[in-house]
Image (tube, rainbow, N blue to C red):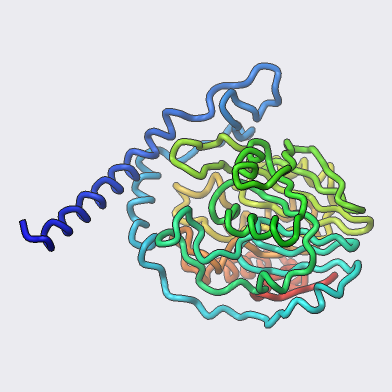
Length: 358
């Protein structure tokens, strides 16, 4: 066989193996699973991981998941064109000079810089080019981070919602550990992952547990989602939302979640919140996404359930993770807010890099 034909044959074999792995992975994950209830432990604990508490929760079937992955194979290698969303030039100067005013800055996706009472908190920090375990494939950033990493103020704490690559980026947390030495507050099961990166100690929290960061209280809260970084560790680590509470200001960071009635308990126990940052993207197709991501309309139901005064849109406009048009989520959000009669000033769709205070 000529050399060119041999190379093509090898490439075809590698592609076939990759497709075979992707096709069989959902089946393997479903077989391994987190196991049954853990005796004597909270209801969401399992012998090999964690589970959602909503009795109606169902993960998509194996064939639904496989079809979704296969349909998106091309976009994982050939990235969509960049989208020129509005952005604000933010050199970080005002953020570094801030000594106590409450502010929120959208860096992109689910990365927010929250400033309360002199404490600077980052949520799900992600400054890498791709949300992926490899540099050559996977969802690619459509536009640069709204705030350059080098322009950050001193970061005192980092909260992580769950282990998915668009929320937990190894390169970014390593850089934060080296340059800012923040406290990493993470859901149960992730401490070992951080230790393997040489980051110790990450502080693990279960739902409803809290830590003090200076004058600010950070509380780990329930959501309805799942976790995974490989095909074989599904639901081995916990997923969470977070309350970040200062002396006079309360912020809710929803992480990733489908809508369920458990958010009413969050609102009753820790609300009302001054501000709630809630995901509005990655909801199509519904048979794949509806249990673990909110549509813009469901995001507003979540907003009402946690009793928040202002809504901050996140988890859209940065990575293409699902089938809806990349610019659709904020249009649907504003339309539903109008239908509900909500004051437009309460619904914040920030530009990349934009900072607002309240």
